[in-house]
Image (cartoon, rainbow, N blue to C red; front, side):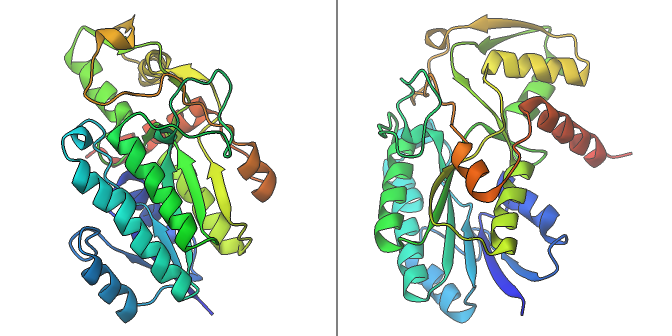
Length: 290
């Protein structure tokens, strides 16, 4: 019997990668919903949709992710990242539906010197981070069987992200300044999408919080260098400290996530960030018009 999967945030990077992979899972029936049909700012509309088309699983990719804008729109960020998540979690628990929710490295303060474990103390430093953390707590309280996957530095062939911005700017400019004192590891959304679908397809559901990003330890500057190298571009790159590039929201200086738990629980091999970057660049080239 096929399982029905509701995917929120279908227009986002992860949502679009899930759509690409959906055809590889013929036993799963997908409902990909966007804000137009499933508005996280309208609880009544969300609940009406869920009651009319009840899924077996919900993958909540939707979020308020405009990190800097959230500083001036805290109520909207709270509604989407916290209150709507609580609504989804309560409905899921009441209807015995499995909920998988995506969260972020921004729940940490970035002051660690070793990769963050799932049970390390959280201390978000921005509106975005605080609302995502509050969403985690509300979801776990309402739906203890939830799976939460925290991820970081997400990029893909879709939407707006660091990789696509760097490719564009490196072709437009002779030189770029890139922050070199924020440390982490990027996440190719295609890899994360595959992990999510494998968890659902295998029915090996182990609730809890997990961390997922590609393997490696780099700065944004080193990530830009890798993009430049693999794309064969010639733009000069200069490393600068965070203080030379002030933003409304504070970024974690260190957001490397320890991914041992998801590897050990599910037996996943996590690709190296550079191998995944090559895959994304190949995907971008395939999407270019002839």
